[in-house]
Structures are given as C-alpha cells and as structure tokens.
Image 1 (cartoon, rainbow, N blue to C red):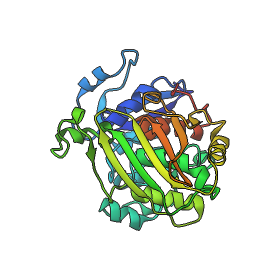
Image 2: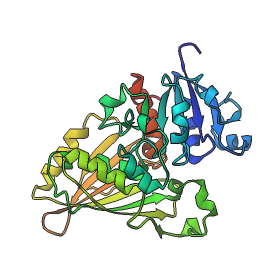
Image 3: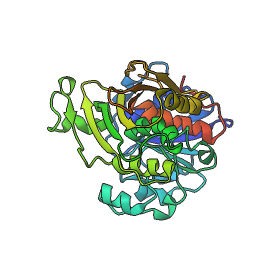
Length: 337
C-alpha cells in the first residue's frame, strides 16, 4: 500500500459518497482507508455496491484525527458542515470538497444564501474552484478544491467559451435545468413537497436556488462583466441525470458559436460538443461525460444550447475524482472509464 494514497470519504452512505466509492475503488493509486458517516452506521449500504468491490473498511463516525492520517479527504457532507471542521484538518491533507462551503470566494454571499456564519474564512482564501476543464492549472497546486454544484457544472462548461470570448449577450441568458431527483439528496424521500417522485415533475427554488450566486459569480469572472442569469431548476421523474437548456442571444452565427466551444473542448476527454443535434441524458448516465449541443432558434439572433451530465458523477463524485487525478498528476480518466 506504500505506493498508494490513503483516502477518507465522509458521507459515505449518501448518493454521492457511494458514487465516489464505486469509482475510486477501481483507481490503481488509491487505498480507501476510512469511510465516515455522521449518524447511523448501517453496513447494509454495502449491498448496493458492485460485488467486485471488496475489503472496504468498516464505517466509522467522523473523526478529525483519523482524517489527519490520510493523504486525501473527500467530504460528501451536507452544505454548512465542512467549514466548521476544516480548520482542524491538517494542511497536509488534500481536501476535495463536494459541498458549497468553499465555492464562493465572497463569504458574505455564502452567509446570505446558506444562512449560516462561515467558520473558516481564512481557508476560503486558499480554496480553488474545481471546475476541472477551466481551473485545471490552479487545481494542480491546491490543497482545498471546492467542486462545483451539479447545475453550475452543466451551465458553466458550455457558456465559458462564449462569455470569455464575448460572443453572446451577457444580460439575456435564460437557463432551464432539469435534474433527476437524486440531486436533492436522500432527504427528498421524506419531503412532503415532492410526492410520487417517479411520476411527478416539480419546479423548485424559483428565484432563490442556492446555485444562482455560484453561476452568476463565475460567469462574471469569465467575462469581466457583472452577469445575472435567469435560472429555474426542476426535479424530473428519473433517479439520475441532468439536462440544462440555455437560451442566449448573439450577433454571431451558429458556426462561430459552435467553433468556439469545439475549439475549447476538442482535446478534453470528458466533453463533447455537437452542432444541431438532439441530446439527452442516457448517453451520459454513469459516466463523467459532458455532452453539449447548440442549435439556432426560430427567433432571429437567438440560440439554444443544451448540456447533459450525470448529476452524481460529472456533477459531483466524478468531477471530484477528475480533480483528484489532476491534483496528483495522474491520467485524468483513471477510475472514471
């Protein structure tokens, strides 16, 4: 085991934690040393894992001392949990966070949207946003990587080459996103607001979804302009998968917009850009892939971009493992094929 990195995963029995286990257990450079849960220690959860995954450690209650024995820590914890613990974690441990606690550089914005005081503001300054294809160079040297939310991932990847090159109007972007209900976490099963999950489409977070400031902040960073988008999320009657439909205006042609995206991502192992083709979620399910398509709208100088990802993988666990590979200089696809 000496040539392998020891990792710990918190929230190991949640949807995202389980996906990290499934994927990273196949990684040749990893030893899963600790699996942590916050509350119930229920070993039955292992029954949902592939039978090829063997010799996993017993579940333990979250323990800072044990985390500090590891090289890498993957906290798949609820929002507003890690920032309370992070200052106790050794600076030698690489943290690849799946929550929102270190995504927003502006602490005031975080506290406004998550309604809690941030307890590790000094660490926030050291964090790097883990949008793999865009912040790769910074990720390589960071010990605190804040993985993006699933909705922002499905929006920022297709829009980055367009806003950074000033190819679309910044102030008329409309985003309609649909996610499998796993995106709401296990708590969704006990929420009376979303009955009959397998037969119901639900709009939620209208005008106040917590991913809105994340989307606005990074689009503004890309463009050097203050951007605020119209963003509306929905839960759809499928367990996993995400499809974001983005409406933009531009004086440029379809070919020019497509070429900008294609040029940006032509060498990326997990991103594919298509022109005037229909896409859906079945091509990305259980993968770390991002599938993007751009279409000309029926309205003059308007275009429709669609982006599909697996919300549990490219939108969470998969991107975290991709960032792990980037940080330690491994081939980016390791554990993700």
